[in-house]
Image 1 (cartoon, rainbow, N blue to C red):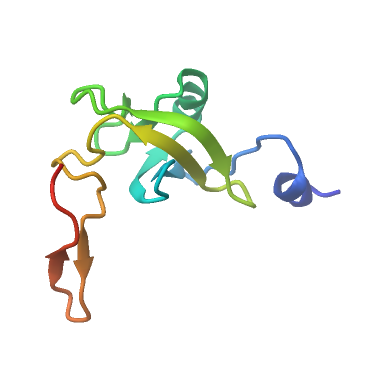
Image 2 (tube, rainbow, N blue to C red):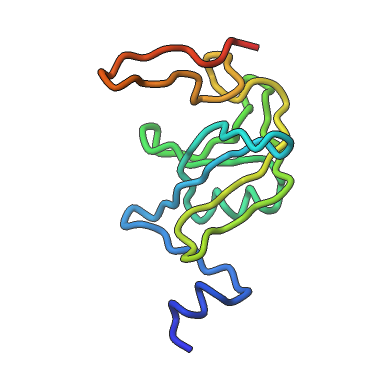
Length: 126
């Protein structure tokens, strides 16, 4: 079997990081299935997430790792970490301890865009 076949069908975690050494990570509410946020992880953030069960990301703008909720207390407790078929995206199924979005919404995806590009709120703050 080739490397891609093993990556796609095997049981070994072999994450395919991008050129910057990052992989996208989607946070999903374990109970409702709602997508809460998307962040980037480097290898160290992924390992820390798996060992601590707290969603940990790499900030591209600050060039450092951060734990979701470290300043607000609104941690994302990782119940299950999944990897997609070609191991280039992580899905964190989490229990939220407070709003996920830094501006107070349950999800960072609290607005919807219409065909003209106007935004409307689809959630209220918690």
